[in-house]
Length: 219
Image (cartoon, rainbow, N blue to C red):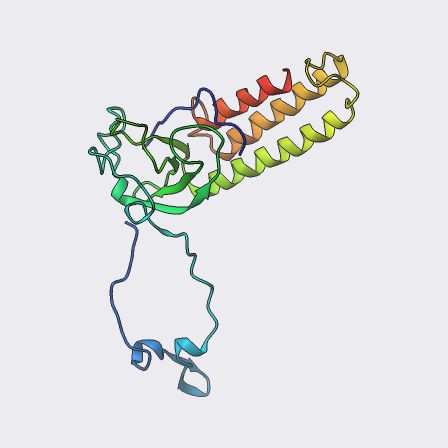
């Protein structure tokens, strides 16, 4: 996703249903009955039917490669600890980053109670018991829409830069045509981000990140 937002901060607003039942491959729970106009007949056992592959990265946070601090299941942040419960966080995968504490990765998580999407750092700063985390979006749909808006913005910005490739990379591009198009492009980026997650945008991660991108466009 690029550099860690300079002004990003953790915020939160507003269970994961696992079935523990077990049955063997030949029991009736694997042979549901299908009824049609020709009567009832048993469907093939589950092992004979094709299924979607199980996402290997999907797991609760405590089962991930995650350093548990003394504040667990809280994060050690007074603004969050009144309601957050890391035991309910589900890990969707890992995201590489180029700054921040610990090893070069972040865990992309969903709050299994509220549905918010978070980055959680799996390692803690030395001699600290708090867990670093950033609230990204109010839900997965909003996260994907925001991510798509960012991808489109970056692609358009790259296309714009190619038209001014003769400029010195060490100094800002002051051509009025570049400034005009860059500003319009960034304004559209902000609009798409706000539309993607209107309740979570103002003062949140993506607004901070978008304005950091604006700084990069003119530096």
